[in-house]
Image (cartoon, rainbow, N blue to C red):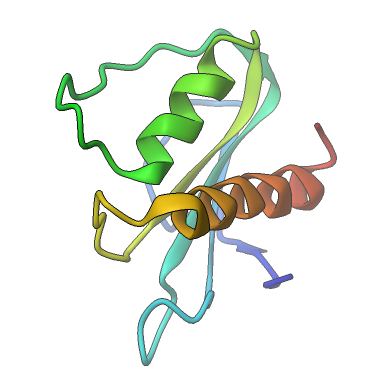
Length: 106
């Protein structure tokens, strides 16, 4: 699991939120995964593509948003190739699991 280093001044965000960056191996150098974390669970809101061929992270995000309050959002610098099949879904779900482990939620 990548180590997330929280940087209080790295981004402007409301009180009760933190952000972190890590190297996840998506790019050859530098941080390529960001994690935005709420100190307490929040009601999520999102707008998703209506394209039939949406990327795996969109599918996983749709699944998660309907489960109720969230504590974290994962942002990656990788390309959102839409037709990645089962492997792409597995990768997106694993990234969500890693984020949940990093912030101590499910």
